[in-house]
Amino acid sequence: MKSQTDLLSVIHSYGTDEQCRAYLTDLRWPQGIACPACKSAKISRLTKREVYDCDSCRYQFSTLSGTIFHDTHLPLTKWFFAVYIMCESRKGVSANQLKRMLRVSYKTAWYLCHRIRYAMAELSPEKLDGTVEVDETYIGGKPKRGGSKPNKRGRGTPKEIVIGIRQRGGDLRFFHADDVKSGTMARYIRENISQDVDVIMTDDFPVYPAAIAKAGVLRPHWTVKHSINEFAVGDLHTNTVESAFSLLKRGIIGTWHQVSAKHLASYLDEMTWRFNNRKNPYLFRDTMLKLIQSDNIEYKQLTKAA
Image (tube, rainbow, N blue to C red; front, side, top):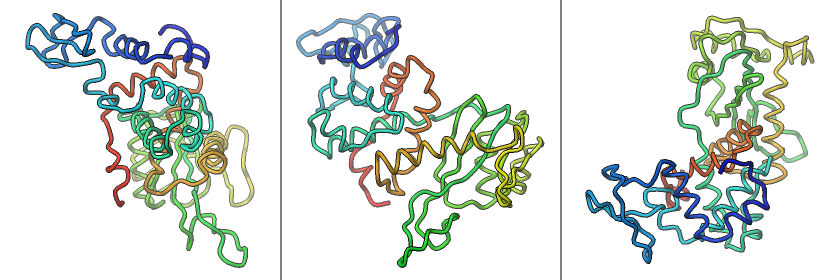
């Protein structure tokens, strides 16, 4: 697919399983079908069974073999529509909404969403450089009886910690963290920020100076003093990463409504993949490529006790 995808083109181009299979074949083997076992291009097609037979090693395979679609009982058309909807829904889409749109059970819709999120995860993203902002936020938690608000940093409330790192004009990273100790923050900074970064900007949470030192980043660290209601001094601010936090919270509050701690990381993967590709006209194609290359995740693995 060399053109941008919209809803009408998805309906027109992928309205049958045959069209979906043909598209997946083109994505998987752009240079021509090759045997997954021996890489031979000498292939015979067994049309009635929708499989290929390798003339060299006699291995039989299909377009779906070894992909997330292998042995799926859901029509490929519904997979394609679900992928498109998740790619184009800026604040995400709930499993209940997909259930109604695709005419499937809630269990099927929930499992489908998580399999797509699992494929969206970036395994080896490039490190961020330039001007990078680091901040933390807290997800969930309920007010105590009597109407008192949950503590911002989660003391005494069941809040989950999300660390955000965003390069201005570049990519975003979200992480579900166990704590905000300097060692934990240092690990995320070391793994995601280049040593050649121009400057790191944070608020005045006292953990950051020690975390940046432990990470070994020998670059300027600028601090905006939120504790005295200072939110921007010229280019010094963390508004860029905070805007991404705002989008995440709107997704949780307005779309998903409730996200368990166990699965929070997968929702973060979905949000960052979509956010980092927000200007990519080929987001649907690139997401389908990730699904083809992704391992499958079983339902029992998703539902087992944490």
